Length: 325
Image 1 (tube, rainbow, N blue to C red):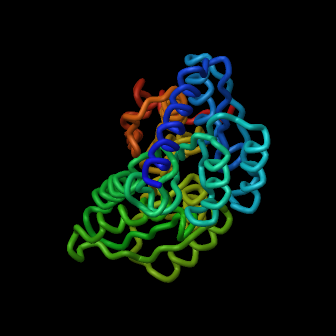
Image 2 (cartoon, rainbow, N blue to C red; image 1 turned 180 degrees about the vertical axis):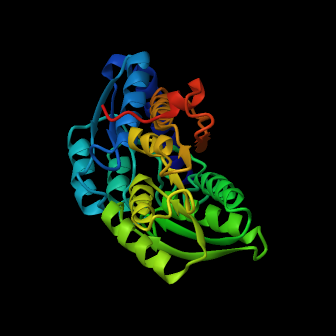
Image 3 (cartoon, rainbow, N blue to C red; image 1 turned 30 degrees about the vertical axis):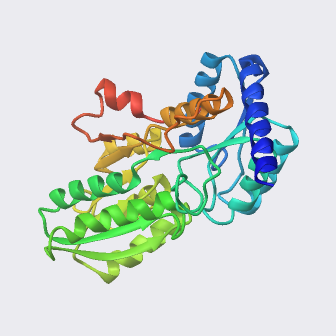
């Protein structure tokens, strides 16, 4: 039995090697299933992915749900499976709910990488889910920590800091939240955490939550908005309360609206991810796997850019701004 199993394994390896060796770039189609349609972050990610696909001579197809919702994203991935794409870069809308459909893609022979967020615990070597070849994202914990350290400095190292992120379970959100909390904890009580609330990427919800927080705690000196909608909603509440300039705001993500708010003084710091680079690296990872390479990094952290009013016009900051079209 052992000899038979070994023989079968040898045939499988041989077949896989031949398939990889016989693939030509013109024959390869990679799907990008991004997080939410129309979001400048994902528009920029798609641009990076398409530029990389053009460089490699392969075809890229892309789609995403109208809302951040695994029930809306799942049929889009099933549609890509039905198209028999060779590879896929997915931005999972939920680390647990999206495992089943992405596993279906993997079982159909589609080489998979995740971008921006991950499935399982994100450890694709030894973790709970290991079928993706790579996970490519920003260092969200470090980004949240950096933003809140800057806010704490702007507060003079005292007062309360309020945190808004989109969801309590999406890894990118929780890592940003926890990075911010680490910055607060490092002050050893000089700065208090005024609370953490979840906006579901809705600016109106963020406004209402921030208004309630400002009424509840008069010592709030800063708000960390873990994505654009959270930060924009918080800025609206701060402006309504006539606390603009007094209550500092950091925004995670750098679409043009966030940069306009930065220049207008509504927002004080913007943490820019590099979604174009994330998309490009993820496509490269899938392509390399399809071509038979095995030394692919299972986890890649793409650096972010910190933008303030002092450096907003610098070439580095300008190149990091997300584009809506």
